[in-house]
Image (tube, protein in one colour):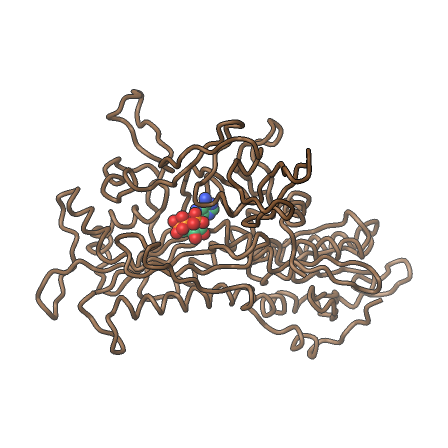
Length: 495
Ligand code: ATP
């Protein structure tokens, strides 16, 4: 069963992942705020991406460029003149649509064959009664659409106190250009040899004509981008270096998404057709994911050739080349650009993790998030919140675990319900402190100093001495198998 967008939106709001921006004022079109759990999940995605693609690779470095840049950057990059989408307006209801997406929406039809009847007809299909195809506005079904006009997607703003043309600049529509303009700074300061890459994670802004589908398409979003510079004169494994590295990056990116939980059957690669390719691109492949709205782009991996560096060299008058020691010649590197959206990645991870299961006749909602992505790594729960010694022990354990991982303490419900709540937000492990742990002073019974640890996916439990909890949780969160832990520590029968 695949999850619907409505179910995800409602889970995200109810459990503090994502809220509508400025909700108390009626909300802002297509802007979303990440709540307490959402910010942890998104930070985890960005953290593992940065660790895996920047810190663990010898051929990568990072950068954090500013959002506001010199206005000429956007002239040189082509964004001022070409970063446009064709839009059409409805002459009746004044709604605006992307001309190239209009036919992908269901449309409203007043059917002459069935007097007075208004129908919503699925995208791309004709009316089942009269056979008509959509010619009017897909929303109101009445208005003619204007011919397409080009609409620039960049947000314009002014730098400084004077709102005059000279001060015009833009909120960056992609993080990539911050990397290109710093190419030489990084090359010189870090003494890099080709091939090497520069990565950046940051906000980007696009005045999308038709934003929507929750956090899939918004006007403010975050990108995780890499510009990987290669020597176009080199050959690797019998192929031109740019083609070889393009293929490698496609494999690495798809592999990364799989490693953190996206199922193979929900991922596919889509090559851009020749007529769809940007004029400077040699090849572009999109990694598509089967979102609740259907197959859509999760990220793009483009071979941008030497276009960007040459443009910036021309507009800035600076030399942006690499000195090839072997050939004793300057060369303008080619660039492979893996570009992913952090918000789209989060949506894909959530959608893929969502499961509804039946457990002993009851519905269980569980997010099977990868342990390194889960917003809470471990929850510590007291079996009885009225027993001070149990509460105190549980809080101490939480404090100890919180030094290394995201650990929470919760005593706001009975244990069964606490487990269900943690399952619903994807917490991979829960630790429960009970009477056996601390003993019973009144009866003169000593505790065994052990706690119950519960695995989210199997719901199995094992009893672990408090002193061994940190290494055990550490092993599990580092990818250790539950069955190995369960084999070392006696299992507890689930009541
Ligand atoms: P689309 O065709 O969906 O508009 P794009 O091809 O314009 O996307 P790119 O310019 O290649 O997107 O941007 C790289 C990545 O940034 C996308 O694959 C996506 O993950 C993310 N992204 C782009 N636009 C948005 C947006 N409006 N909201 C959220 N994420 C976005």
